[in-house]
Length: 247
Image (cartoon, rainbow, N blue to C red; front, side, top):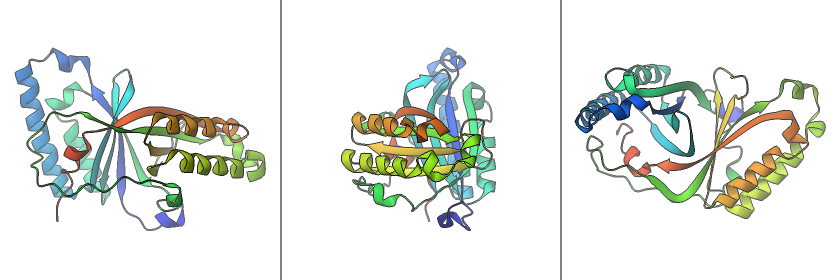
């Protein structure tokens, strides 16, 4: 754990989600009624447990039933448990694909100097999140979702043998050249076979994401880690920014 994360009690749900085919067999009236009831329930949990952030990303290439990736942050585990229970509750919960992973923010300040062109903060909105607008993806930037971990044998290698310095230098160069807008990372509380860390990277154009992928898989460091990548767009960011509990 990085020293920047010490004592941090926040928990972030990393959620791979989507709609099952059975959702589309419902009538428009049924879908609307289920959605409205679902939003009311989730907003109640958000306010009760102090939701700090809800952010969604739509994959450009859906992976079967997995269509969107979400980061959902609470100040404690109680909120995360309540959110998951409410989100999967019927009737709405019968028609969703749910894959949840609990995590903590990782190295929150370590790579902040790499962010060359952060987007301006959105002004606070007085919009009522109970009123669901037409949702759409934000096409002003591209988001790269990166999942990975070191291979087990990499721990027996020195930083020089793994190419740690070369990797950092290449990524730093890509960040500056292509105007990295966001660098955010999360560490799972329980590691998966081929990933334990998740990175969310935002660039103004696709060429930045492509260059970042090339740098991550380049040898020698690329030979000593698992990596998977997904391109995405931010999903209705203005609307979901209205969800966190207001003080």
